[in-house]
Image (tube, rainbow, N blue to C red; front, side, top):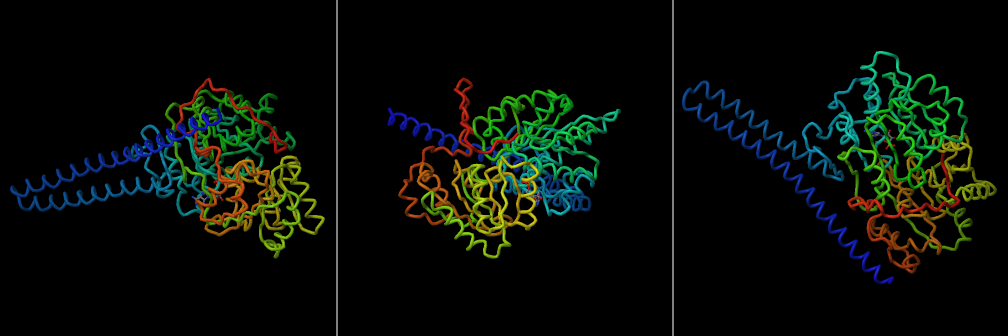
Length: 530
Ligand code: AMP
């Protein structure tokens, strides 16, 4: 039976990977076809322009030479624009895949500069420190400004907050322009799975909206409701919130979302992983039925796909930034150490003596469970280390405080659960130590991606115990792909990979069986957000 199902799954994976390959080929062919058609049309126009000149040449020399020159100039322009078009397609093909209805229409060509977007200065003020739009911004703004539903497969760090944030501000300004009475209800909603991410988005959007008078409020649990209720009552344009608290405030009748016509689900995969699906559905049903839906997700599992199918236009734009394979940042040196569970405390202290000798460089230590975070924090404090931690069971003010101490460098040693693994933009983390291996290899890749950012090199030192051996095959693949050393002790756990399909985008192109039994989430003693 087991062998049978293994065979079946192998066959399924083979079919899937062939399907993916065909799809990719089809995408490339489609793209080429577009370029070819554009090229052909322009070539024809160019030929016509030139032949037009040669006919004239015979009748009137003076006029004809002028016309020929003009026609040649036009031909040059056409040639240039063909190249531009090819260049754009090539550029958009480099690590970016754009799909969906009419995405190759020239009005949606990627932005090369912020100015090209033609937005008011006060809206572009938030981008003035950046040279040019990041790839996700370059490939999203035109669609979002046009009102299209949008799926972005992009991680935090890609500039995605402004990718959806700037069009959100424009959405508010356009609605304000068309209204007579002073509107008090929010028009945009951003849902975030964690408090920290919600606050981070809120900081960006509050700043970005200031020059144009667009107000944002952050609604999250673990802190008093009073100020959030007052902010909502005083009138806000954009609400950024975590699902639990938002639902509470909706039920209390203080958060009215019927005027919300621009909705962003950020880190949709994580939101569903954390069991927020009922809240997300309930909240979406409170928003205006005529709305623009935007989903950002680092991965594309079936659950997220299903949500998109249910709440989005049948033809959303989809932009995938980066590789479709599970790959670690190659600027990070990955060291994996196989050891006994009980040996980790001593080893951590030894490693801190090595990596955190100056006590001024940023070191991030990941643990799996919130109780582990406090235990390791206390253990290190007893041994004289200045350390802070963030995890779900800390009061919100303590989490915010710990994060800002780490960010501003006053306490550059932070213990974190996976809540901090994604979503937070912490600059200059020199070393990541995985005290506990995460529950998935994807989380491992996200965790180690906290270092080696902005062109810098980083180190990720990981403890791997026999309890983690089920993930050894996947980890070995990640190490190999990045050209890292695979320790023999890790190889001894085996190279078997349970799921052949990429967990990251595995279900991306699969048909969804609506009758398939739903996976139930098993809750560990890990972080719960509200
Ligand atoms: P995000 O993915 O939104 O969390 O953004 C990650 C980081 O990229 C933030 O520190 C932003 O300030 C920065 N950022 C956003 N847009 C750009 C851009 N166009 N060029 C360079 N950095 C950017």
